[in-house]
Amino acid sequence: MIRNARKIEKAMFRDMPWANGMGVTTELYAYNDEQSDRILWRISMASVSSDGPFSHFAGYDRILVLIEGAGLKLSHQDGTKHFLTEAYQLAAFPGDVGTHATLIDGAVQDFNVITDRSAFKPTVTIVSGGRR
Image (spheres, rainbow, N blue to C red):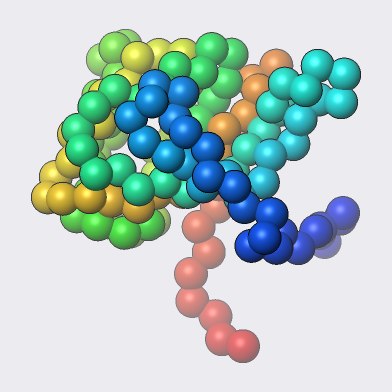
């Protein structure tokens, strides 16, 4: 059962520059702490068109899902690597570990979840199939 579900209208989306200044994220929805205005969780989509570092998000965990494109390799400073080469593959990683993306063959589109790790543990479930 889904509780407190809310439809997110496209008019609510907003383009936000990446923290590292190398691109733009389309923020689909963000939930902020009422007192501090700190983001507690956010969902977004982004186009990645060149190799480069990911923005640093101290205290946050991230999940990136490949939506379109040939893929990308994520290399993290802790030695972890993720190879996303098919739509809907995902990578979960801490936002405060240095991460570098290398495109496999051109630009990609991704879906992102970022959560304040002191308040939430992010999960993404890919559901496929089904008919209406």
